[in-house]
Length: 383
Image 1 (tube, rainbow, N blue to C red):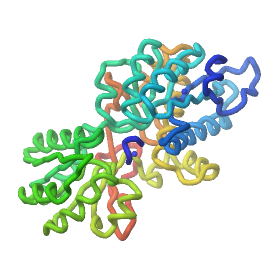
Image 2: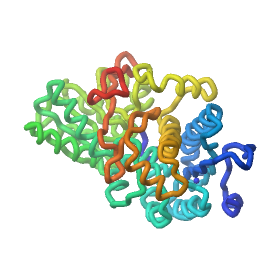
Image 3: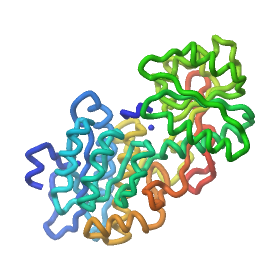
Image 4: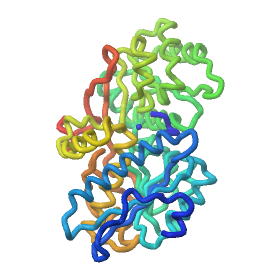
């Protein structure tokens, strides 16, 4: 998953676009939500995928709405996935006093720069795609993250590697935004399990795959874990095999990517990768939502799924609490118990991360990914 890639009246003049016309009775209770993500620029495609999931959930929930439930209204703001624009558009998203929650942003840089704006406005912020540990490390009480954070992913991957037989794992990463925190989490968890995990970092901008491979095999690992993106780290797979390495590969969620299949299916055959994306056929509570989404929008991508889940989360919190203002919405999300969504069951801890993080493992066989297991048992998945 590419980490660039597993928001009132005045705002309308600067890019706010309602999902649907407001055709309800003036006496109908409403819940207004904003989304801030790129709708222009080089990251437009993934931003529109996020919006597709958000809008699909809004449409489905409004169609299924009982007369006493709130009608959902969505305003979408284009930040171009640029930090400078994120500051401006986050202020627009907070400007309408009727807005009770915001979904955004797409990247760590945009989210980090906008967080103080939301905190000052006491605005609940649902983070749908960013896994960077820093997002929830700043003590903001209004931030709630859906995907597993990098450090937790590394910990769960380490537990998997060791539980499946590794005695000498080696985790390698690059000096980019995604990967180092995963690798650090892996090493910490391996140490807690009394396994010494070696690790190294090589350049993202000027990678030397041959040198990186030589440094790895010199430590005689029985398992090499690639903590990063397939687009950037994929060539290391071939470089390692060229050195004579015959052990197994594990990849973090940046390898749960079509690039892995398209470019590295042969050299990576048997590779197990982690993912924040559940295997929906084994998640029975998602069946109706998945079926409805696919009927109207086609394949359900990971980014769209998290946008869909963000809307479900907000609606459930409002229904349970009857929140009519932002502070009560924050309290509902913080203290409202468990929320079942398309991407899992969420109960949030004091930092805004899920209390019981989970991830899912897929194995690459014969040019396609097949589901293997979840990191730990849950009521959300059958196995």
